[in-house]
Every structure is written in C-alpha cells, then in structure tokens.
Image (cartoon, rainbow, N blue to C red; front, side):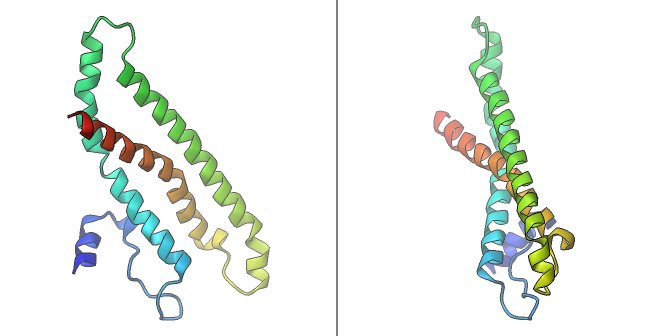
Length: 146
C-alpha cells in the first residue's frame, strides 16, 4: 500500500519500483540500488520549492541591508555552479564507463546499456544527484533557522 502511494506521488521518471526483471523474477541488487537512488533523488528535488520559499526572505533582507553583497544570494549562486560542475562530471563519467563496457557487453550476448538507454538513465541520475544533495542540505539548514 505504501509503495502504491509513493508511486502515485512521484513523477513518471522515478516510477521504477516493483517492476519484474527481464527473466520475470525480481530485480537485481544493482537495479534496486539504482531505483532507491532515483527515488531518493526525486524526494530531494521535490524540496526545491520549499528551499526557494525559505531562501527568498533571507535574500530580501540581504538586499534591504546596507551590506555591500548579500551572503545568501552569493551562497545560492556558488552552490548552483558547484552542483552543475559536479553533475556534469558525474554524467560524463557514467557515459564513459558505459562506452568502455560496450564491447564486453556485446561479446557476452547482452544488450549494451549504451544503446538500450540504461546509460542515459544512469547519467541523468548522476547529473542530478549533486543538485539533490545541495537541496537537501539547504532545506535542513534553512529549516533550522526558522
């Protein structure tokens, strides 16, 4: 019942749980871990509107003060730039790893993840993971302030 509720509340890109494997059995440990990471990432990214709502009054206070530069605004821009750089590096690493596994997967008779879309899903999760981590950290920090 709880899994059904989670599936209804999450976007379609995150609905990966409780799907049978290709042989009709359960998912492998790696696929389960990937599914848990995707659900965790979606949960972290759903906190973004709350972080914006908590951060806007602080930015407004920084703008109205006589301080030359707002600390919260600079922190927000720096965190986004770092999360973007980390995400791009992680996504490129996943694509490189799947490209290196291409021929071993073909020669072993499996469908290459580079062509089947598995590498794309993994790279998207890897690219968004730093942003989700930053959102979760900001939510925890800003909720302690209020």
